Image (cartoon, rainbow, N blue to C red; front, side):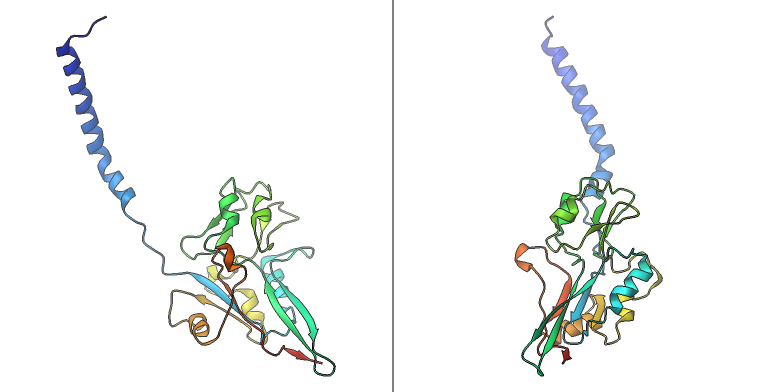
Length: 230
């Protein structure tokens, strides 16, 4: 069936009119999508002073009790290395191993359900257990090997800076409060007046595996002479 030029132009006009109306009704939403989200004023991080740490594991136990972590898994552990030197001038070195709360978290990128995510308000790398299917992709992707499958919930778990248990109440993470030597400092990287930022400005620090581009937010003040002399 042939269409006359007049009919064709009439049809195109109606189509363009419809597009214009649609565009007009969609403009406010489209503009809102183009507007950048307000950036949060929080970016939580932690510093572990290896010179102050004595390897007592008070932080490990406090985390276990507050967050109800079963005995055969852990959100945080303190690795002991040594002894260094010769008796009687020997020392040990202690390092914290836990979630780094990476700004470019590999675990988040590989999660197929969105269970692993970065909280926009705090920068904390968190886990939505309701969405976790226990596929263990995040465990395989984490270069720090700090995730595990919770033996009771069968979902991925790790340190979340006590986001659900203590931060929600305006309290410091359990490990920070429990440390007898104040080896842990927790705070907001975006607050220049926070104890954490002041500490990072005055003491040399390092972060693990920064060459991977993960941008971790767990800082370490490196051991100088060791903590325990035998």
